[in-house]
Length: 81
Image (cartoon, rainbow, N blue to C red; front, side, top):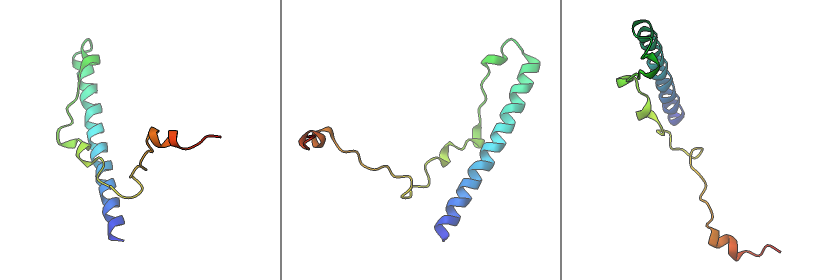
């Protein structure tokens, strides 16, 4: 049960980080549009410590593992008729 709780907490943390980062990004872009409308379309926002990139793929459990693909050589050995 502890593993589920840990996974739930990681997901909640990631949601909170993404929400905070998106809110600041929207505010930044809105201010940039007011100050410099000509260049606003080309502005970029640096998420800094509000990036959730470091939390990607932390939950490496059985539901996230891909099944191994069979190689094409194995497919050629099996008869199709």
